[in-house]
Image (cartoon, rainbow, N blue to C red; front, side):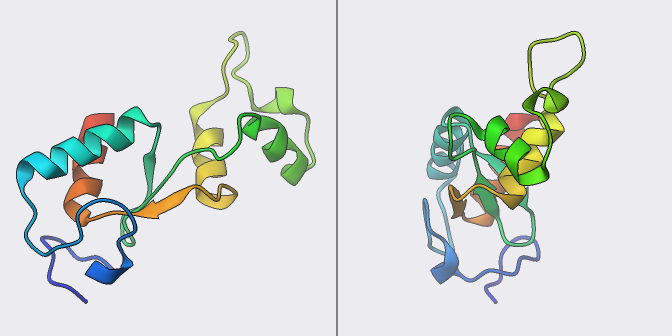
Length: 115
């Protein structure tokens, strides 16, 4: 394991997007994190620094198919939007659009998204 600022279960060679060196410039960290947040990625694993986003435009329909439910079951009552926890569930379990990032990039993304 690589000695990062916090405990992780990744090595530098596991990183699939962004900087993959021990020491990373702050500007590069925040630029990369901002780019990923803008693209719709969010953190799904603190230990492995995995980020993900829905890989399909109709991810709600795919989630409904996987869970044998109607797509309407995932919407917030009285509103025209999907409950956030369902998108989080889809990102953690079903999406194929997943990357591993440097722990500092992952932490910066979490701060930007308000976690």
